[in-house]
Image 1 (cartoon, helix red, strand yellow):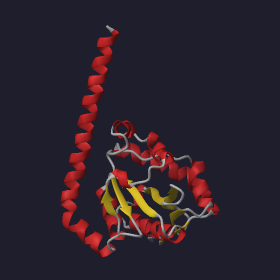
Image 2 (cartoon, one colour):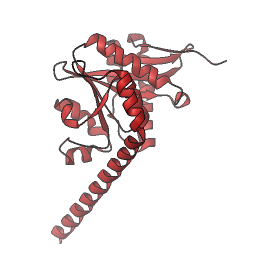
Image 3 (tube, helix red, strand yellow):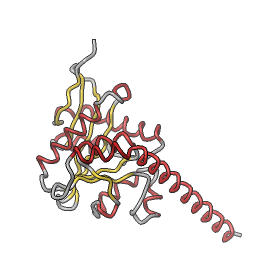
Image 4 (cartoon, one colour):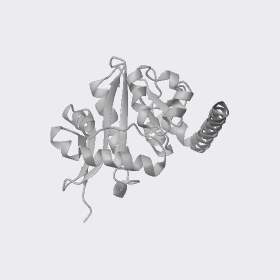
Length: 228
């Protein structure tokens, strides 16, 4: 019998899931070959205790998914970070429910803050577009150095640094409560341009990788010559 999935705001009683969540975050990032800011079980547990996270579980308590809130720039920016779903429940609609719930929680707790996210996946872009997010440049995100320092554990961090934090493998998306289109408008715009976004993301990621590998090769050759 298929169990009902419950999506709710996390609390202190959920800290027992913290290790499972961080393990799956790391495993998923390795499998995709893309980055995700690495978090410790203690960090995730603190988010739960503060009520700044959303968790999805089955009725029997089996963990299904998770996402948490980070606040930057004196509460002017909020990031809905670390979205992760257990492998058995991917492509089931759980990610969308989690994103909807964490977005609503963010709007309730920080009504004037701009909500943003970074993603390498088209599926997450679609979910964000359904909520009213728009693709933006990195310059429109928080300049809080602590946020960008959180990218250090990402496999693509050197690319981010090489581009002076102005570009990387992820696509930036933003919801501005003071200046935004309706979710219906952003969703329709994404739907009509989804193939274009897909091609752009692949082109961008491939271009950055080629550029970075060429840069590494040049640096390696230069160092080799200097040693001689």
